[in-house]
Structures are given as structure tokens and as C-alpha cells.
Length: 424
Image (cartoon, rainbow, N blue to C red; front, side, top):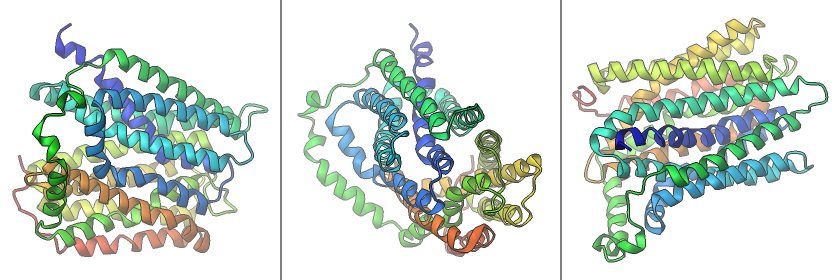
């Protein structure tokens, strides 16, 4: 079979398999726990810890490269993800389901982060440069389809199942995640045959001199990263740019689901899937595409403040939603779409700045380090967001979120960026 055509047999499924578990761990778990009666404080604290594998991914990545082939890691992690999803489904009816499902979500998070490392590396090994360029948009599309399928499809199905007589939220999520587990086991088995075999095993490369100097190169990689110009300001900006968004991300969906008496909007689970997981994701993608177009035309420096404003100002819609508590679903959906569009537009500047920091000899590894700090910037604020919300209520919590955008904006004023960076 032609190599170009053969790539179509595994790239869409590989990147669907990359995005799907991530969205289940980070987003779907929040909605599921809210449906099952877990408090906002516990949801935010424990699900934020699930960011940890992505925080330490840059450290774990070289170990993955040394131990086995990327192909082996991909298929093995997909089977592990399938087993973990099935495990979550089986433990949901238990009295102490929260503890056991968290353990399994932790396993999923580490497997998903390891799968990310392997899949992205395998993509570069299995394809030549022209194929990589051709399929970069395809892989992104199927990653986004996975987001819609997870945040939108799974949540909508679980919500619809809950409407059936005699079906509890635990039953609904048990069936949804059980089917997902079988799907992933099937994907893992399929990729055992479908993935090409472009690389040698580590054992066959044992005499490669790069292996003897691995520790030295790792040390040089880390030292050179922390010796970059403006690195202290850059890392502070990386950690604080999404200080408000990190907290909003953990509370937005519980806010939509909570009763009006508790200060929420009482949106049904299936409608949350439709609004946040479908309309919201499409708005996010549109904002990201527009941001990329403008940044490539005018450069990062000229677009930075516009993108910072676009990312932070729409958070005000949640303040209005909390005070007004509108019942019109179309109005709520419009507000979510505005916020997600702004986030997608503003996040473009953030990712471009991380690429800007990473420039140099170890560009790929330094970019991975930047994304680790980015995940840490989401993890720590998210851990405490639920407790803050329960302490002050939704209205004041969303005001607090808006105030938390100020440190990132102050640090942005200190950044020194080449005016030509990002332009075509």
C-alpha cells in the first residue's frame, strides 16, 4: 500500500486516542463526580492532582524513549487506558467509589501522558517531512473530534440515560465508561496491526554513543533551560497567565449543573454536554484558528495584548451569569461560546510565547519543559478553586477569577519579545 494512503489508516485513530482519555480525565470526570454528589471542593482538589503526569512529562519522556519502542508504548498504553476505563465503570456502584475511581483516573492520567509522548514521537519517526506537514492538520482535527466526543457526546449520552426510568447517575456513567473501555481495548488491538514499524528496539541501539551520554545531555538540557534570558519572568508568566482560567475551568461545569438554590444555573447534564462540549469546543477552535492567522500576519508582539484581553475579559460573562441566573438556554450557550472563543484566541499567544522561550539547541525538550510548567500553573490554582467557591459562593468566586487575571497581565508588560517572531 502507498505510504501516504497507509498513514490514513492510523493517524486519525492515533490522535483520537490521544485526545479522548485526556478529556475524560480532565473534564468528563468533573461532570461525573458532580452528578454523583461529590462536593465542589473535593472535585476541584482531587481532579486537579490529575494534571501531575503532564507536569512531570518532560522528566518521564527520556525514560520512555530508553526503555521500549514508541510503538510498544502506544499500544500498551491504549490497552491500559481501556482496562482503567472498564475499572472505573465497575467501581462506580461501590460505596467507596470516589477513592477507587480516583486511583483509576490517576492510572489513566499517567497512561495518557505516556501515550502523548509516544504518539508525538512516533509521528515524526513514521513520516517524512512532507507527510508530517500534510497530516499536521489532520491530527489536530481528530484530536478536536475526540474533545467533542468526550466533552459533548459522552456527557450528552450519560445525561440522556439518567432520564430513563430506574437509571441512576452511577448506572449511566457505568455504561458510558464501560463502552469507552471496550472501545480503547479495540483501538489498542487495532494499532498492534495498523501501526508501521519504523524504528529499532532500544536493545538493538545499546551501543549507540548517545545512550552513554544520556545523563550528561539531560543535565545540560535542564541547565541551559534555566540559563535562558528572562527565564524567571518567563516562568512566572507561564505559571500565572492562566491563574484565573485554571480556577474557572474546574468550577464552570459544576456551576452550570448546580441548582438555582445553590447559586447555579440548573442546566441538565445532556445540555451541559451540548453547550460546553460541542458549542464551546467549536468556539474554542474558531478562536484558536483566528488567533493563529492574526499572529502569523502581525507577529506575537503586536497581538499579545489583544489576545490577553480576549482571554481574560470574557470571564466577566460568568459574573453576569452568577448574578442574573438566566433561564434561557440559548443565552447561556451564547455566553459560554463567547468565553471559549476568547480563551481559544488568547491561548494562541500563550502557546506562541512558550515556543519563543524554547528556541535554541534543545528546542523540543525545552518546549516540553514549558508545557510542564504550564500544566503546573493549571494544577495548583485548580486544587483550591472548589474550596474558595464553597467559601464565598459563585458570585464572588467569579469576581475573584477576574481579579486573578491581573498578575499575568502585569508580568506580560515585562516580557521582551522579538517584533518579528511569529510572522510568516
